[in-house]
Image (cartoon, rainbow, N blue to C red):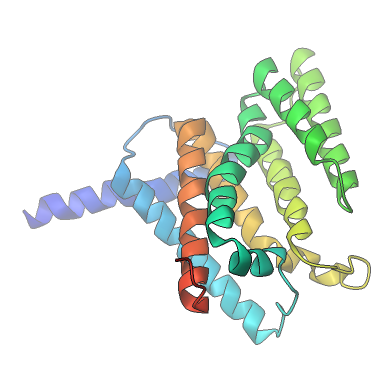
Length: 229
């Protein structure tokens, strides 16, 4: 019984080995040895990374920037829960993870949806991402696509940078040196979602993204004592 449990645990932890190989070499292992427990281990791994990240920000005295969702949470917590927990994961996965297989349908969908996000102070970022999508399509058509590992890292970088728009009245030029730190968690999260999308399908990436966002919003509501009734 103990042997079986240890063997089972080892097989579930292998999801982290798969993530390592994916980030290092761009390897994927579709549908191999992955289940709910494997997903939970990956989720806990991300939670530990985020916890360490938050502690580092606190030690460095970084993080006093106002977040746009703070006021919205107090006024409309249920609406924010729906937007952040359901709408945002679906929208963002279609834009940043759907086109990773380099197929025409995914690239075109991401390109059209990205156009709707090319507004506000960060519109140049989305325009840059749209150009990246076009380049991905053209390079794959001529038989010279970029290695999937670099596509994943570049896509995750765009995904992270666009989240700078979550901060209220952020002086991008004045605090340029803090920009990577402010969205580092989104970058790592994007890498994990890319892994799930390419190894186990788009819907699993959407579910993981949605569950993570719902958990975070729920923790904020609970810790902040925001009334939702």
